[in-house]
Image 1 (cartoon, rainbow, N blue to C red):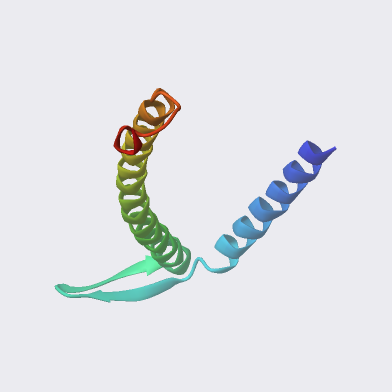
Image 2: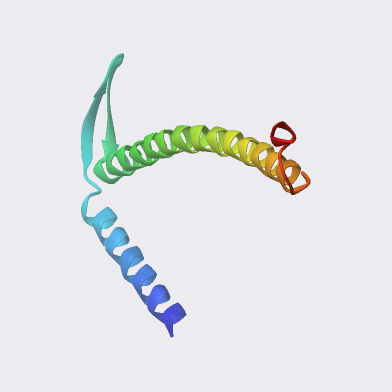
Length: 100
């Protein structure tokens, strides 16, 4: 049932996107550093949306990379602590040598 709901939502989004593209096909002037040209409005909107998505992915991936580095550091620290714990568990139980 949930697959059908997801399919219907995707179909509605597709139809809305197509209708927005159809009604925004008139040319607009796009000015950039070296000149100006005309593009359909929907192409400018899609380009701006895509640029925003790419910038968001770049920001998230840099944070993800730093978190992976921290995860590796913490795993190494955990292995060292587990090794120390194993060593401490293998010590003989009894009176300490200083107390004898």
